[in-house]
Amino acid sequence: MGGIPFLPKLKRCCFCTRKLKVACLFIVIWSMLAAIHSTRILFWPACDNLYEIDGGTHYEAISYFKWLLFIINMCTLISSFAYFLGLFWGNKHTADVFMLFGFLSALAMVVHASLNILQIICSYGDTDENDEHSCTDPSDIIAHLIYFFLWCYFIMIVNSHRDNM
Picture (tube, helix red, strand yellow):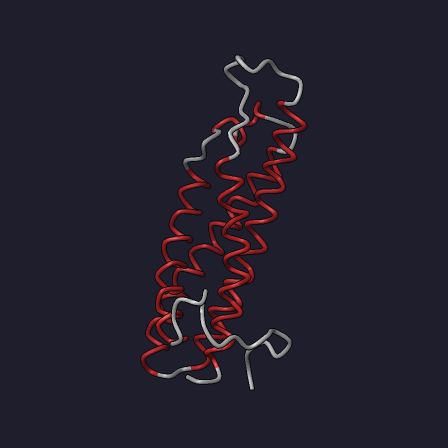
């Protein structure tokens, strides 16, 4: 017995499809795109100053966590591909690994977004809006928070389908 027993079992995804296997196929494709987009956020952020030494007080924490999130994103990408194949082969273990890395990815994205918020507040809270080092673009933070909520819902969908694989 695998999966996550305390999560609710859903019968459909977003009220748009009754087939959880089809929903899981969409989720796998989404997770691959989300991992790639999250990696883009890490290496080409909307605010470059957040990742520079003179950019703020939490530079080291953000820098280390950036690489940790990159590794988690790559593992999520690999587990997504494995789960994609597992959907057709009926391998339940691929769903377990996919949910594990989905959870780690969601958790890491929330921590990364929180560190970015902290960096903006601590480093740029008192700067002039027209200052070239001022960076208050929240688009990357918002993207990671949206991904967190989507991951939470999608893990429930995958967990619901896992027993039927």
